[in-house]
Amino acid sequence: MLFAIISQDVQNSLAQRMAARPAHLERLKALDTQQRLTLAGPHPHTQEEGFTGSLVVADFADLAAAQAWADQDPYVAAGVYAEVKVKPFKQVFPTQE
Image 1: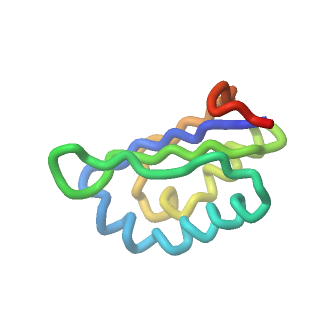
Image 2: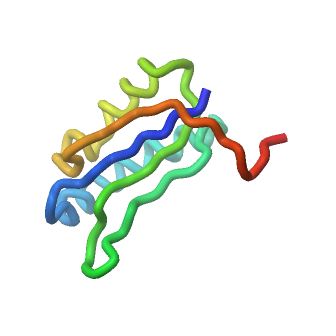
Image 3: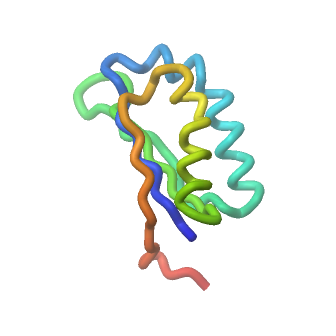
């Protein structure tokens, strides 16, 4: 089942993001290699350098598995995220074959 992991950054998170980014990307690459990643990316600031949060949509066995994966994100350990929400996600478009 797909889950959306919606994260909100702390203020001025760019330095922490950059330090933890390689480990964060490795986890996303692993999901992609397993063909479980639908999409992932940050929410950039519109008026300044940096980001306000992130979105990951990926396939997990259940909500507990998605939450556990989100809780282990290097950005969580590095203090990048102020809040992380995990919610079931139903993909409508683009249609899946």
